[in-house]
Length: 116
Image (cartoon, rainbow, N blue to C red; front, side, top):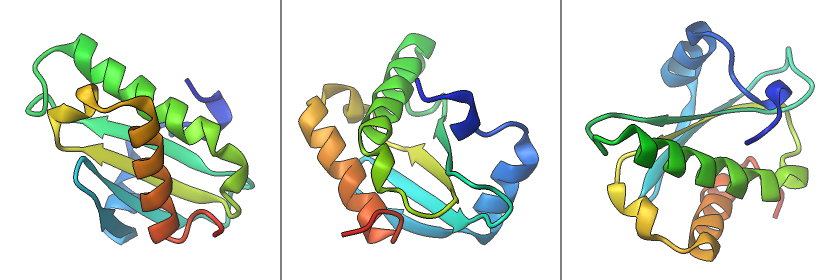
């Protein structure tokens, strides 16, 4: 899990990112992000619909794996971004940790969040 200062609180911020953010889409999930100058660090939310997987245990496992992948590259996020990762493939559970971390890093770099 990531620390509380890096998590979203409330739905208004999520709504703002969904409305105004830029999207990069990969094979397992999409990353929507926008710079938030009111903050001094990034915030992250992982959204997984019940349509992706019926089991709450499986959805929470996917969420934890994505949080861990972002936490491992924490120092590379340079600006105070608001980031929403939306999962749309249940096969994320079957991916190895290395492939998942690579995919997260690749999409965050593509979105301009990570420095090269």
